[in-house]
Length: 146
Image 1 (cartoon, rainbow, N blue to C red):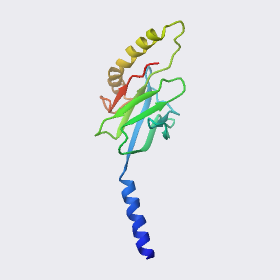
Image 2 (cartoon, rainbow, N blue to C red):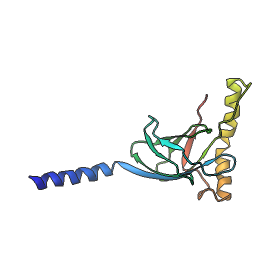
Image 3 (spheres, helix red, strand yellow):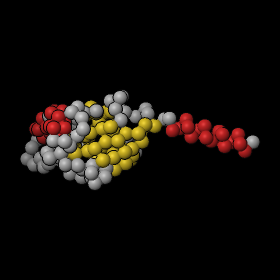
C-alpha cells in the first residue's frame, strides 16, 4: 500500500511538472537599452512569478495555458506582452514613464503610442548594440491607454 502511494505521488509530480513551461529573458529600458533590475514579472491576474536581477535577467515558470505576462517597474510604464508559442527566451523593452504635465489625456496617449509603435525598430537597434541576442521580438506588445 505504501509503495502504491509513493508511486502515485511520483506520477502526480510528473504530470504537474508537464503543465508549466520555463521562460527566461532580459528586460531593458527604451532609451539606453540598459538592463532594468527589480522588474516584477507577473501573470495578467497579478500572480507574481519573479523579479529581474541586476542584469535585467529573469527566469520564471509559467502555466502552459498562460500566454501573457505583465511587467511592472518603478518609473517605467507597465508592459503587457503576449508570448509567441515557439518562444521561451524573451527580450523585452520597457517604455519610460515620463511626466505628462499640461497635456490632455488624449494627447498623452498619442505621444505614448508613437513611442510604443517604435518598439520593433528599437528592438533591432538593441540587437545591433549587443543588448539583445535576437533581432526580432519574441513577444507581441499590447498598448494600454491611460
